[in-house]
Image (tube, rainbow, N blue to C red; front, side, top):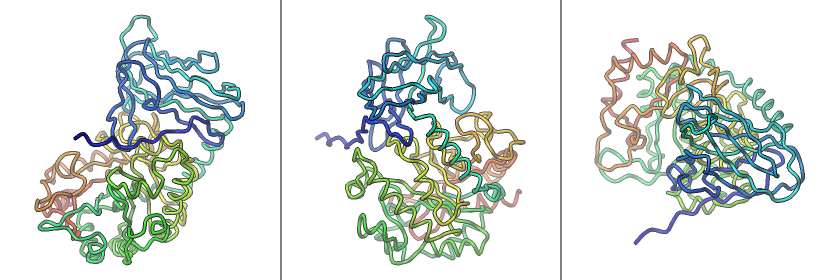
Length: 471
């Protein structure tokens, strides 16, 4: 039997007055040939296959009060051809020409109108693309149209800059590199059955883990908390109020902050807002609801409590699926960022764009997942001191997220009775990779699989120790 389809998030068509409203290409009515990338699960990916001027995507919006809106199209050049981008709304064809670009995965935000008066009422929005030169072949992907009142955009940009100014990433650069550990409810030991999550947290050897991490030469650790299933390794009243039984009596995070600190390492936390692997959380949190206010209020309570609880001890957040999950909900990014920095305004945060455009103006560093170029596609020069100077990640501290073992599937050790796969590099190769990133002040974060008892692979540990000896 074919399993029933997963629920999907259906957005409201009413424009938000206080933030951007993102019309997602995957949600629009599309003509033939326009296909959403990876149309499954909780994520919404860009729509590709755009090759003809006859193709279009259409949405219906409701303007609650007549006002002026800036209109921006978020798309990717696949072919190096200038494109004419048209947005038809309120009986007017708004258009702009986009020159091809040579960096940053070719993603671009193109403003087609810096201020268009939209009368109160319901309107059709139609997006079309065509080559700037008649009859010239082209190819593109589209992710969204953004509509925002210009005065709101200016205020949010100013707030984002002020918040970023209080989060100096100098220490992050000096740390040289970090380690990512997806230690979750899914993780298996080397042999045998896995323990229940609370028991695994209870038995975790914090001092051994910290000593192991310190041997690598890393300057900080990113610990994955919520991933496929929503759990948190500490007593957390806000999470218990939403879904009881998903926290622990032991505060593993506080103990890790202390143990890592004794070795000069800092702690970041990874957080995922929800996954189809955890239907109980999706129901309890209101994950699929069109009205996102209750869902994000719960998010803010959880993240805010964590931030206040650990204060300066929590150095940063790595929020996953910023582009393919948060973004399609048109969140109030400023409120999310303030909750994330609760208890520590200097805390560094990012909302992972994967290989797409940056979803939120409220970020301090580029997550860099799947980016293996220390120059970020030519947007970062050695003299930039790690701050990206061009493209959709500009003004952010450069970072990368890569797996140290196997291929891109090897983030979590979720297979029973198997060893962690072999490391990807020799010590000399890893040392050279670190040197290349250091030349650009780009900060790589390497994911290491971890057994449930908190041990990593001895072979991977040897690789890092060997690279450290090479300088």
